[in-house]
Image 1: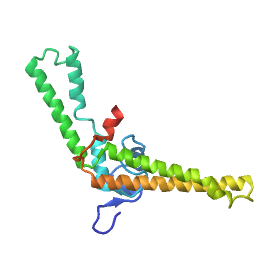
Image 2: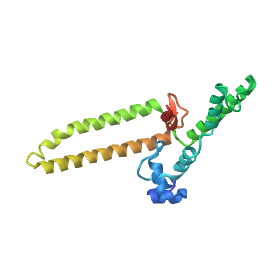
Image 3: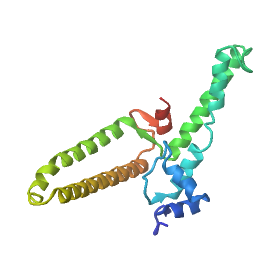
Length: 198
């Protein structure tokens, strides 16, 4: 658990499961969820994870209205006889449900500026690419007199180290972005679930 005056954190899956009042296997499934918004390893801010679970693991409040509206447009369902006023009312209900969902996502820090995110990720990827391309030159001299097995082992160790650093940088940048962005800024702001539906 986090110390000091900062947000409460869980450093292990077991601790997070205890805070969420869920089983460890359930929390492990969260980490594999397509919409998981945090790093795969702790620490995790408990309140952010709690908000994520409340949003992502409950049905979309607008889904039922969207399904009814689609059926109504096809002349089916309970709204097939709805007049102009009824259809306006249905559309209003849909828009209101969507607005509520977006506000909840924004308050949970799960909205981000797509352009800024893309620019940041591309910069990180290009930096990693440069390090990987430079690796043979850097390792050529130290490994010149080594056998093939040693060369493979050392190169694998270096690559794994680079990938671990890259994963840590991405996770740290994601947490920083979640804390800094509110979803009200300029640019394309989308939530991850919406991106997945496209």
